[in-house]
Length: 464
Image 1 (cartoon, rainbow, N blue to C red):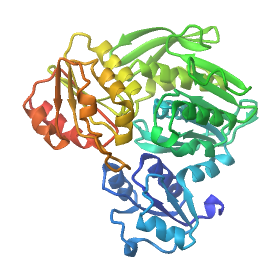
Image 2 (cartoon, one colour):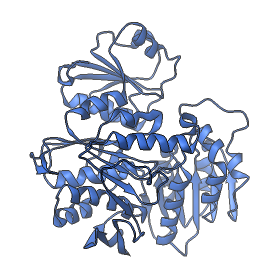
Image 3 (cartoon, helix red, strand yellow):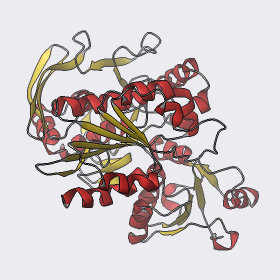
């Protein structure tokens, strides 16, 4: 493959994906001519167009450019896709997104953040901590960081001597376990936020998922550092390297929250870091699981010799991630919160956080299941966690990259719900449903296209 800086024309198949769009923005920042295809228009593809990146939505060979130095594609592109097969059969330089990220990270000090959930917030926090502390940083994120209004961040900063070496430019990369993409990376430092059952369509069993995460840890530089959540299934099988175990409240972990208080807009908390107390940390976003995410980021920062003062200032100024415990609307009658959660464990921590903040309010959760395979494999777990709230509104399954599976519908979850109130509706019926109901706390949950309804729902609630 050519030197990345010599690539003048690059095309992305699946450019609207959150990871692909970050990579597209990276090449645009290098001065390359960037364009791409995606299945459907979204707010993200519109943003790319406004930034000067041409995007098409028809799989028509006439529309695809022919003079290209590089074609990047996502595994979500189907095997019968005309554009993908044209570029393959015509001998173009063709690479998966994960391969390109591996090349980008190979000549930089790399911090990779993996895990079944929480990795977007942790990687964004780490990037923000580095930037605010003066590090020259490039970050590829799986969500839109509100501080920078982007999933791709680049800060010139300065070369910093830390971690026993001159770091130069630091790359912060969200390491995706889907399709084993994170095996392309060879990080200097890594975080693993959780190792839970997910992507069984790829791995087949929890044991295979564990094996994949263990292989990822074996990719860490032998002089590197691993930060991993305590009590994970792989923790007894980790390679010999410097590491720290972290937790929200497990006092046997190396790093944990020793005390926290709910305050207006977030939390005030203390952290025990290998027996030393760091006091007076402030986080101005909701969700107590975000304290745990901050602990992982703090551990990386401390290992890089960032001072407590810089850590405190950066955390206090962190504005969170779009669609991660995002308060969309609030008045004296109703609070409306949106979250990207699409795994039962993510839903549990999200809803428990909402309940902690609003203990005496009725909580209504609107959930859009993501993927037929995930619904089939985890229907009972979804129902169990959704039943934590007073009312559940269940939408039809968002298919994403999958074709329908016989017998797999949202009813698999619906029939097992134990909430006092529950409804099963089509997503097209959601707006009318909201118009005809009163809410105290309304939350929308899911990784599909439920976000398209946030603005209309906000409009309805604001008129009451």
